[in-house]
Length: 284
Image (cartoon, rainbow, N blue to C red):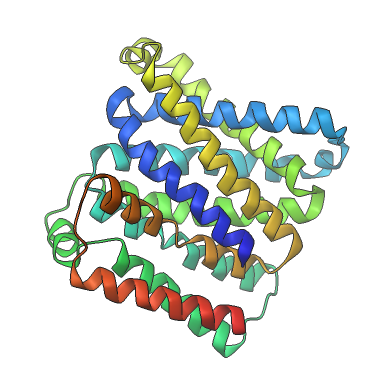
């Protein structure tokens, strides 16, 4: 569970930074720069650690599928963050945990106790409540707020991509799996950009804060994905997924501290549910 909570910290920082940077330079450049930075760091880790990639050969199909799904997930998620509102996008994103847990139970044969299953449900519901103004969320859903369809799509895709990365981490080791995933993801994103709209995509990108910010987003995201993959290699995938799903709380906390936003009543209730859910998950 600790691995999942550290992953949540990284993803929460990446979400907050990604929302800011994508509105400055665009969602596609933000994803490309951030993920290319992560892929480069993982390549250095493999070289310094002298880890071979031979184990990937029989799993290339899964590597390719995972990279493409992850590319689509990141593209849709960062586009949703760019369009906003975050009060709609962020809580829906946490629902990826339900997809990932279902896949872990069905395909990996993991069995959760009643306490763990209850803790998983309570945690995800708590995250959704804690990361949104419930009234604004309902109004945004009713009015088909910009980014809502993409937020739903990204939650589904992240659940699938997260499961594939977890499975690969068990098969070939988390570092090799993560390097392969990031590299395939970058290629899957870069090819359409190079073929279709290169100039339009990069028109808003200039040397300076935007690029540095995108790299910082990539490092935060890499912290999240690396600890998630390492945790999945060592323990129950479903537990790591649920613990990592609390990442929207980081964005909420940063909004309160840096943007001086005031939490509403349902957010306090949500935080309480998250604490209860994680305790149930840990004790289970």
